[in-house]
Image (cartoon, rainbow, N blue to C red):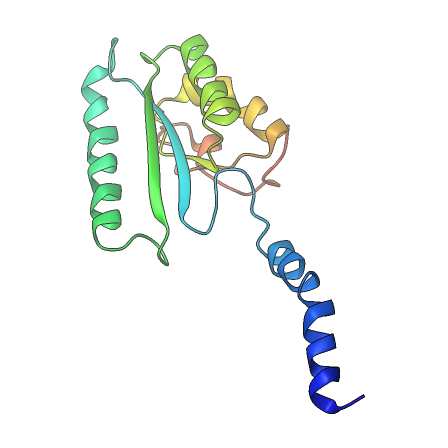
Length: 150
């Protein structure tokens, strides 16, 4: 078999394999892709701590600035910030929505000790990181323990 026929044979037989190999290397967790990173947050936009809702608005503005400048390594941030009313049951409801429906990669900067404690076990069971928790409780601000502790 002439060399050019051999090369053509290899190219034709290898072509179906190459896309599968490339796809296998591009496996991401829910909430991440080649084009975006989904980040969730609950924040008290209503209720007794609603004045702290400005923190969530400022963080949303920052992520918009990051996106306007090209994102993170070309990925746009999809920042989903939901009102929990500073209520633990509402925080659980909104966190479940973020994880199960919106499929966020992580939660970022959610505010409140009681609200963050209420969602902690659920997020650990789902292996969804809780980053930069905004709380005065020192036990919630450190990573001395394994990240998926119960």
